[in-house]
Length: 412
Image (cartoon, rainbow, N blue to C red; front, side, top):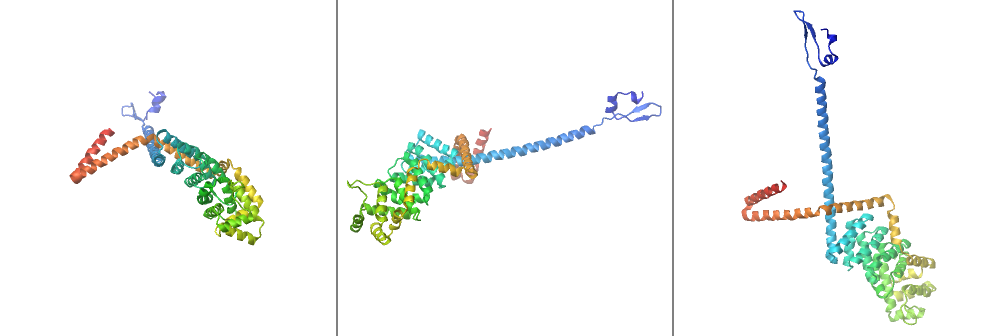
């Protein structure tokens, strides 16, 4: 049979080698060509091997990321939990109250530049000031706005506001308004919230006892700040002046009578601090420099006179503008805070706070088994300790073997 009459499939599948034998017959040697198949299988093995390696690498990377994320979540979550436990210990809040405070701290951490843990620190200062749960829930917004507006840390701002509110006899619900007053003062005069807080530390208790408002005290401190008298210096100066005006010595009383200075009206009713300041500006403003210095030195004392003269000699424009700004400060802290965060860095800071919030949520989902594991681990450590006390190293090794066996059973 001629080769050309063989089927095409047979020709392609066989390697034909035709030879003539001694008897004249045709010999056909057939061998399957497996080279292509073997090459294909080799490539498949290579691809499979690379695929497994890639999957292994990916799995390792993903697993590592999950472990790292879990570790980070545990760290921030446990820190936040500890901070809220401190709030509970100080304030006595438990159950629904503690849950409400926890939710509020998480809420502020998610929507402001401050993290939930920082919010918890602010709540601690409020609790130390004797604020109850409702007070803290109502007061934290204003405090956080003020801190964001001035760039001050949250805990320090909380300390300033709570102390001052207590001194002025204001309620926790007034914290937002007081925050607005401080924010407006800091933006309208040459000072900041930190320095104002330092000033209030010295003068607020006396000013509050005399019934003076935080607004009027802020005007006085702002005018002093414009003359570079700030912080404790301004607070001490105003405190001394108010003390002298309310309980003057004989020499001081003579100066007050001579120039018609008084802190009360004709009926003996105490005047607002704004009226007292206007009276001083009017009576001392027309004096010569020598007369003014002599009168101020006697009435206020050499340490306090420079601060009071800064108020007395401020221009009408500065006095009136600062007074108007502070008396119309509602919403100032929030507006300033929003402006401060309206940039890339501010938004990244808020993002970081939100990420911490995510970590806390993850932690709260796994904290129960983690606590159980920690408690169980404590029991195992106690067993090992007792075994070592009773049987020394051999006892310790024997007990460790028992524990490992117990863990293996649990794992199975």
